[in-house]
Length: 60
Image (cartoon, rainbow, N blue to C red; front, side, top):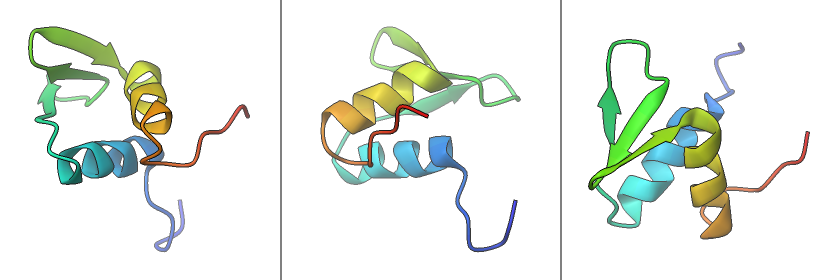
């Protein structure tokens, strides 16, 4: 990864947090995230941020 590229999941987490959503990592590998009582995978978290228009959605 180049220095000017952000990890897309970290970008999604930052965008959600900036929008007032409390996102917490679960475990050391940052592959699961907790929002309230719900647990999200990286892909689910990205889709949530994209559905809110906080990140650019990508189909591949």
